[in-house]
Image (cartoon, rainbow, N blue to C red; front, side):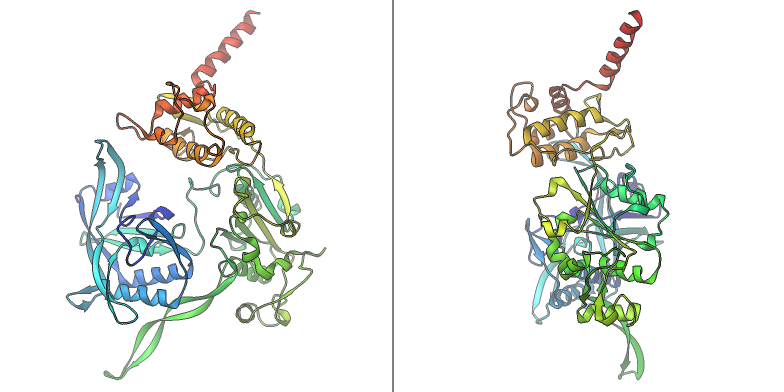
Length: 537
């Protein structure tokens, strides 16, 4: 193994403000198998960063602003501005200095540690890969000398970035940041990568605009994904985006963003022409315009997929595009809208000024552009969708179904059937909340090995959701939430452990027993007894 790749989630990507404290600053958790590349080197390893790579990374960060940053554990939001970019590049200039001279590469000592003892004597089995915050000086955009600290987190975007760590011939580990313009999803983060149910729709009868909605974990995203796969839709015709509270028109449609480009410059001192990197501002299309252009460039159907549509403010994100959602019998927009100058210029370049896609400077959805979206009913309170917006979509409910995967929950040396748990806990949710919205779908979690949901996963995902999002407003006085001593089960109690365990497995077993669930072995024995009695009869 000479190179490893770590996909970055939001936990490892909080931007550190210049004057922030040292909270959430250095640790990256790599997969345990990645330790193989470091185990013969020792705990201290030498890493190397490239100024060019980090410059490109910070420009990418700027292109997807706003984003949250960490300021001594107080989360704020930083928005795009030319000042932000210049400040960041000045900080890089200060970091890439050795003995007062600029350098293109920077070397640091990092830790590569596994099986780290905790204060309570337990062993943390995760693989830590981290470096101490290195303090250095730089000149800000006003020419004032400032002090700050370097952390690789500043150059990472959760869901978009990956870290590549490659061992070079000189035994130095080169660290580079690679970004993608389309967000990827970890298998354990949401439904996008799960092998799930078949959609009831076929592409031949799919409405032009449809929202798939249901409880979390019912497989809404992959209802769409599997339909596209079965019909061999080219990846060139699929465009994805995910709405969130900071989404707006510019992140959905497009806007001017900073990019790095190489330009020739005459060097008067040497009389030669040299290449120089400069920041340029170009119009960068986002998911909507990318799908729109593609639809006018091909006769094939094009699909724009919006994940978690109600996690963003649809009125703000769609803006005047809302009017385009009225489609006629021919599948085209009934009403066109005037494109602003930036969008018109971009589309006339991409499609040609005589294209139907920008004819007379107007936008009109073509009949081969499908817009499909997903919505968790448990998130309806984030940004309620108004009735006018709802009327422009077809809605398909994705119910909770037994997918018969044979998954089990494992804890305290016992196993419980996952579907039996869902049936029981969903009945409890319905009786307490008088609502279907908070129930769990079959794919709420996915076993790492394809069969067993570990105790750690069960606590961290399922019980966390139940305690913090479902039952907290209704209290925990019912028998199901009582310990063996008659005390109320509180969520932190599931992390009160002994013997080096990650979670309190006996308490998990108690909770499942309180729900009157039988273990898999006990259920099998009961079934055998019933069969034997039937045979005797």
